[in-house]
Image 1 (tube, rainbow, N blue to C red):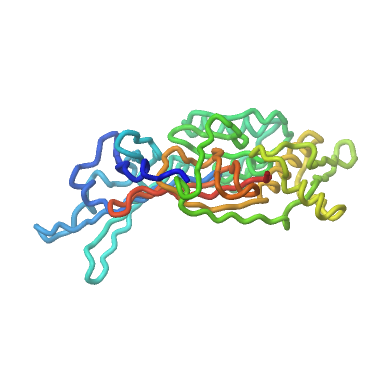
Image 2: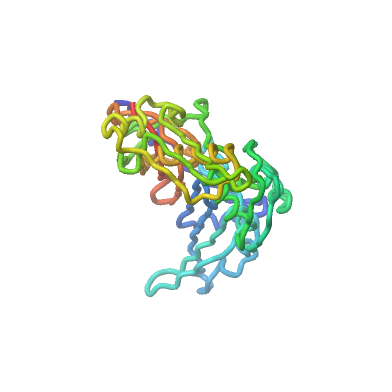
Length: 358
């Protein structure tokens, strides 16, 4: 088995910038921990915990310092001495000091990526003859954000945003068709799940990968799904189906969850949804495909822990080795937590899924 010596000898490093300036050396020396959490279809967050007691002057520090005031722009980089990477760009939104008995006071500075700016105001808005991607572009423009938006192709006659924030509404629209949405730095993305083999990171058991807990279940798997609605204009039923033979695996493995169910439990594994507002056959087909892909990705769910790897990000594919044929292979990362502690170093926890096995 490959030695971990090359990883153990690296020196974990962190860099925190506020308003594009490094935090004071004294503040960096007081850091207890830094955590960056990233999830698909959720806002990214950070937490910086510092000692906040001045033992010489016998008073608290950092709590009232201007560098940690709400609204300041934060960038967090993690990695190793020779390869730091930017993991987070956002804004300070709060702080939590702790004054425990017989313990030195600590201060935790909290923040979100810029998606928090479109998660505040509830609005009611109607959209006429627009695609979901058109709506995402319009919201991005209204919020002063750049766009990374994939054309959803299907024009919908009427869509209502009813007493929702823009981000809640976009997430709802994305979930319907198997898309993901969120904000990275100052860019709003609205896109299908990435499947780019060139960006795969390989984790080997007991080398980079320290812990891994996968769970395979066929309970929620169906060999086909159908979306059914009613066309009031033409007074006819709308029906669209997505089947196991119609879609490819996101992770590129050979035996999908729906295919396994079809083989193990024949004629017992179909599903129909009739609780969706559908305006056209094209919309129904888009919804059926999105539902099928989401369902398939519940086949294998896993949580893992590895050495700190700044390349490991939510929304990417990774390759895992050394777990046997069934559980080795590609996984789609749905969430990460990068954590740095001076006394422990740098670790990355992650959640991942796959819709097929080898």
